[in-house]
Image (cartoon, rainbow, N blue to C red; front, side, top):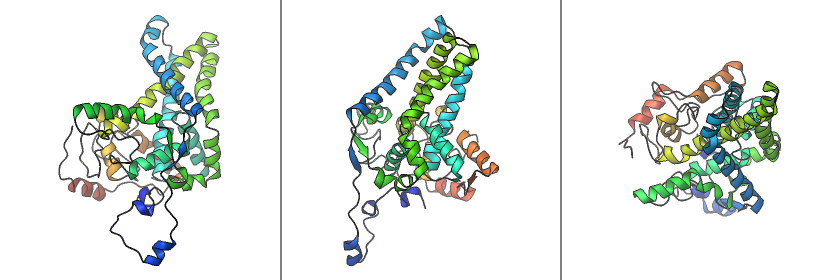
Length: 337
């Protein structure tokens, strides 16, 4: 059973050939709507700021490094916060909260939710709702960020990739959390962490600066750490994550059978902590490991393995060799764009 069989899809979105007794059908409540309202103006303003300001910092990174320098404390802090927040997205927001690839004890569950929040990609429940909707309609009408939404011509794909990468973020409608994330809405710990998202944004932006100032014992060190370990780090992580939505649904190899155009794009594997082995993920969404073939690096799976060894994670859904071969054998063709 995948997560889509559980909480992501209303009965109205299942196979239309399934029939039920008329009395039972009549007694069912109406399906919940896909959307729950529109974003407020301040939400859009904050979103613009969180996309544009780090991007400006990324553009300025080379001249700043050339003229001001890039210290070891900046590099260390940027890497540490990139790894923590990046794994918070891949292991936490994605493989755990969205797809239930494993079970986590309370401490790990809370830690993963906070770590993912530090990526500043949105509150945990909102992020999961959007991603479950993506899987419910992957590369079809209703998918919040398919690059194929405008067609298959080159101009259409250029427009579609821009939309899938960043344009979809500015859609005014919110995905209905009661429909797609009822399990998280019932979790008091996760709801509180979700509500405290502004606090995690402040921590993600200001803690690197504080640590940089303490490590160098200077204001210049604090400013430099804020630039590199806050703004530049956030921008790089954002665009790596968004590239999974755009590039990994357009370009790459498709060795596994899936109902969409998800593809493996190896150049992003290390930076995305294994998320760019995207074809297997869509072929087997609840699998804890995405890079299952020889030579496919998947740091997120290794971290889940470590959590399992420590006893923090249980019931990990590792794909068996038989399962992998079955998915490979069912492929009719694996064209790359």
